[in-house]
Amino acid sequence: MKKLSSPFAQLPFFTAPILLVPFLLLALIYFLLFPNGFNLQSGLLAPCQCNTCPATTTTTTPAKLATPAVDLRVLLGVLTVPSSYERRALLRLAYKLQPPPTGAVVDVRFVFCNVAKEEDAVLVAMEIIAYDDILVLNCTENMNDGKTFDFFSAVPKLFADKDPPYDYVGKADDDTYYRMSALADALRSKPRRRHDVYHGFLWPCDLESPNPEWQFMVGWGYVVSWDVAAWISETEELRGAAKGAEDMTFSRWLRRGGKGKNMYGEKPSRMYDYLNDGWGEKAACFRHNFTADTVAVHKLKDRRQWARALKFFNATQGLKPSKMYHLDL
Ligand SMILES: *[C@@H]1O[C@H](CO)[C@@H](O)[C@H](O)[C@H]1NC(C)=O
Ligand SMILES: *[C@@H]1O[C@H](CO)[C@@H](O)[C@H](O)[C@H]1NC(C)=O
Ligand SMILES: *[C@@H]1O[C@H](CO)[C@@H](O)[C@H](O)[C@H]1NC(C)=O
Image (cartoon, rainbow, N blue to C red; front, top):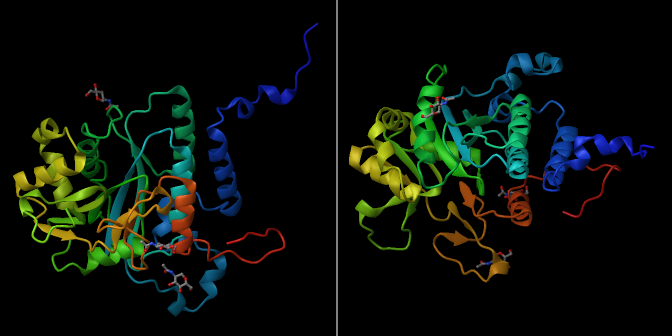
């Protein structure tokens, strides 16, 4: 006789690798919280489009409806790997709960190379259907072997038809948390806007008069104006010079091509590594406690570090009292 087994034993959920459980939980929480919040592009940072507004808003006064015209568009690629499901769920949640920047749109896209594993192809396809915020480049997964080149050279072609076009394109690591309003305001405030701009955290930060020939924006988060990305895209010979630490490589391309001359290094108080007190780390120009006017903080490696950052930046402020839950925040 065939042994009777639980009907659930056949379900993939119960045979999924244990690593997927946190992702599924986060996805579930996210879904319960935001049943309509799937579209990161239009839902998260773009101002409310009239055809997506609830019907009731049309009865409010025009003054309330008027949102400042968008004059700044940024594409931010978060370079990650297919298997980082939990991190993507967390970043989606974190960016969804940020107050939208005024007069600016920052679109976040998760970027990786060719998806090689069977399970990733299926799960990533489902994420794309649900969120449409993923970009798969035609490369083999790597960090310092040209992925940055692949990203910056692909983007101007992929978005060539976008109207209105992006003004800036940036890259961030998946342990970096950008504050979009601060980023948009920083880019907007620069005297030489939108042209030949290279913005980020300038390294080194601890020398009185560093040699400009050696300065570069650290790789965990930098942004260039669209013309710079277009130049990278048109300059195929850079691919041959794409090996080595990607942030230094990137700055070398720009110097060689005479591009990105409007270099805007953010104040070290506004872009920095998170100071992990538990690790015996000491504060330095590139590493300190959270600051209120942060543009981006890096080195958020585990859930607790993310939780501390998100709490500091008031991500939980919207929690409404309810008999349904009780949380110590
Ligand atoms: C990816 O790149 C390889 C090698 O350059 C090429 O043969 C292949 O057609 C490309 N695939 C896609 C989907 O563009
Ligand atoms: C960082 O903040 C923590 C908690 O607020 C505090 O205990 C610590 O002394 C601060 N560290 C530095 C170097 O300021
Ligand atoms: C978070 O909210 C509190 C209370 O409204 C405010 O005092 C604080 O400045 C906010 N923090 C940041 C980083 O915006």
